[in-house]
Length: 98
Image 1: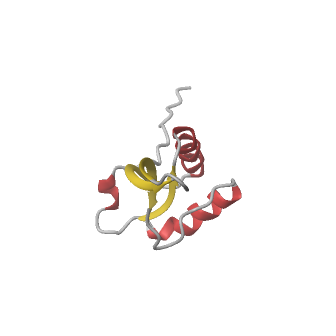
Image 2: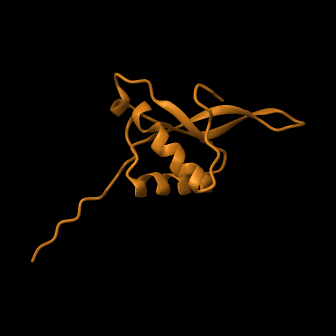
Image 3: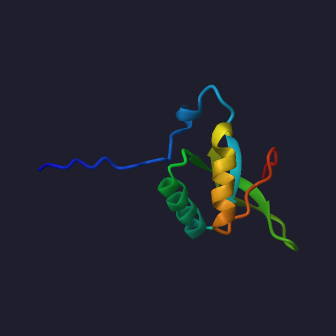
């Protein structure tokens, strides 16, 4: 018997979101955090894209930092947010930006 395995990749190119406005659901500040969230979303079959961008960080010494911004399609936002909350992530509020 021959079995073919097709990798399940839920990470999408930004072109996948053409025609819709992707919604920001999370900003990972560390690489380890981004990799764990990618694994979680991929394992759950949630389509997402990740882009690096700048955000303001720090309490006393504010500075521009670079993070991994996670976006999903509007129709799967609720599913992605529920999954993230269940696993200890604090999602970005709807309409909120960096």
